[in-house]
Image (cartoon, rainbow, N blue to C red; front, side):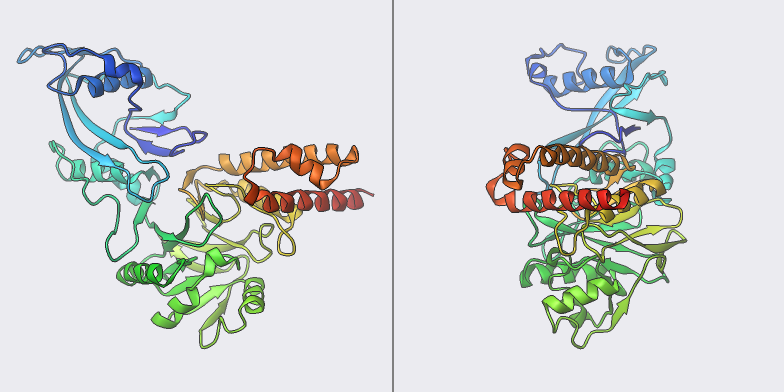
Length: 435
């Protein structure tokens, strides 16, 4: 297996089998008897090309019944996984098993992968159970099938999409960090707010940011949450797409609901009766609220996008649920009165310094490493320099909006304006501090 480079846009930092996309020229490949193992010429050509590109090995083939060294003796299509309906992009992934005459020496293509190696399926699964690796759902199912039977020739992909029907989909790319895909009233292009479930057996199991968009989605979420079991609802910050109908879920289940003091105050100001009859708990920076794989899970204050925003991270820093510190889909808005660009920069810097192995935003998939946090901070610094240059030239906010965000959809322009205003406030504060 290989680990995908953490700078890739798709599944960064995930452990995966070597492979890649079917290119247009692959469709022109002509079937040659005795060399395709009865596989589709198009798919087989793509498979051979990708393996040569990624592993640096030019393959040879054994004639039927005649073994040869350094060659593929059998090629079996074990199954095809189709991405689920909630995915932004949908595609088939074909899983092939290649039986080799001996173990070749590979030279990894380092633009796509930063490591790779051989291990038994059982060892890969043990690394997954220890929370050491990220796996896309069909890859996890393939490893499970091979760990159960190394001679397996088929992989049952029918249920890899997680719970369907009466519940919501559940993904577990990293063991013990369940991500419930809940449709929410969030800002497009995002459609979901990730609802996480963490906590060892015997520890407090936290259901984080349940925010179903309507009563029907609440029913689906509760079906799944009740089956999995949880002890407390944890709200990362006060924005509606992180807490809508969380009070209804707390009342229906009798579970307590926890958050920062600032988040409590902002929700109460927006919805005075939100907490009526609920067991309310307050969490602050450094509090231990659960455990994961035996490691205490602590609260980390990460203001900036929202003054009361909290992140969660185990002491071994295997992951960090960062809420809206970054966006896997779209851009973070820093808007007054709850937003503060100086604090936002400081929160990014704090999490980057902690170097968690995996970052979980509230919108989008988990991300290996802190690369995307670093990119966000770098982008914000460049944007601030651009705004300062325009401000020093006497340009108005409307001028800046037209020049900087000329390709942004019109309905997002008020959010872009809020970011410009926040950068200008930070620049004024920085100047005052320097003086």
